[in-house]
Picture 1 (cartoon, helix red, strand yellow):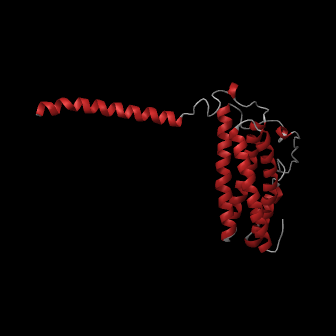
Picture 2: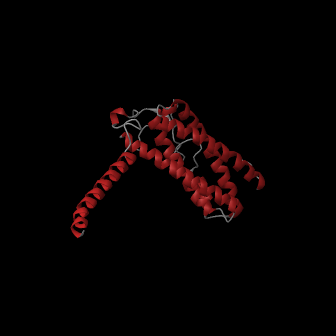
Picture 3: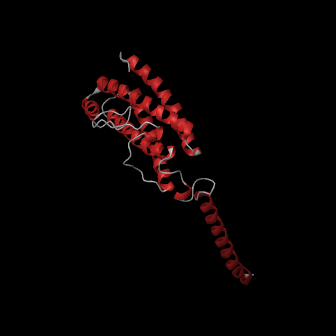
Length: 214
């Protein structure tokens, strides 16, 4: 009886090792993207001048400022509705920005370019030199004013700046949703349009409640 138990131990250990190996292989299959999930090499990726790459680069910068403005207003008002909106923008746009930068990395494309912004839309934008790199983006002066404001003044200025930011962002996203080559960019951009249009309507109501308009 004892020898039988002892002799079964190597078999149990071997069986456990096989099971662990199988689990590990399954995990690799789930984590590692298949060839159909995305390009496996830069040669198979969208070109550097494509809508997909241009949109991912430009919208990453656009989103970065939206997140920055949301952090600023979050610390300058105690209004729960404005703080909740800021929190939603921070989480949504930081996550989307991470996705776009990840795709650029996967495609083997640089995360920035010396080319004028929005060239992928067919009409390049020339930055005005005041910190506003693309349409809808706040200027350095406007960001300084937001940092200096408190309470209702900060809320109103944030809502106005973010409404302009969202309108331009939704226009960019609409263009990408209709002309990008990859499903990833088309689907993300279409979701951005829906989300930002919804928040534009929400911010219009919030401005009205504060006796202001965009």
